[in-house]
Length: 432
Image (cartoon, rainbow, N blue to C red; front, side, top):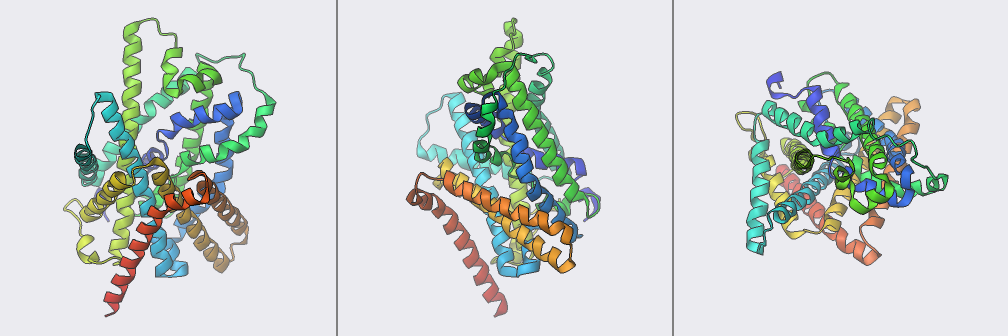
């Protein structure tokens, strides 16, 4: 693929950071402050340390696939096509669930801001229009996609960077830290962990990034550490400006009230910019998730893993996978319309993406054993353990008891099973 149809390293970093940095960065500080007060900002470095082995290991596996890999390829090379398909399909479903969840929130934001009261028929039309817009944007040439992604990511980062810069002017030397709160940091792990899901997006688009075989791994590590730094300083700045009690009471979006802005016009302008940037945060993240999901699906179609793959893998003149993008949009629409509960969509997201982490890490472990890379095997084993812990946390968080958890897990199982049946049906037809 020539450079005209590839994205730069900077664009890949921004896409990956864009997917990671979502509305969670505004929600998590409130929840963690209830547990740890002024020490709650340390929840981000804590989860960074726990998650770093996973990130490092996922980044390393890209080096073994010089022509560009995917989660399908990572698992297929070591465990065969069946496991390869499961790895790619669960990842696709996970990110489709992320897109659905954010689209649902974006729709509700539209309705609440405009004061609309919609019937079910209108909501279906609204869902279709939202998804169609993001699909059409993803059909643009990759260079245009990159420009849109760069612009929206920078807009989304504006309120974060703005609050971070204010730390120099609103530093509170009397901010007290209670060492007793340190013991509660462990309970912030399941709250903070979801702020980093998406760091692996560069794996799905590794074949689209300019550079050598080491570039995707660098993109992943830079994006992850950059996001962790932004989260930590942003959270610390909120505490210095608002204090934990006000942060809990007014939410992080109420930070503008505590800037002591005397001029009503200045207050209104800053509030409007802040609110607009939050809106862009939703839209930009959905845009990046559709890009990642459709790229992953196209790789599976390109490997003839689903019925009618030869037709569905066709590209537009600008070399964009039109059918993969539209199928991604259709999946998001179905989830957004019929699985329209946050708990269910969160379960789909967590189990899809983290299951992919675990299978990919097992594949990496197999490669390292064959290559006798003893020094890296220990890190990979730690990464696998971390992934299993995350899956355990996800299971606990999707319901109050086993019955509710099984009920919320059912949509994931139905979609995962349907995909696997289609895969086996296609495999049988190919043999015939």
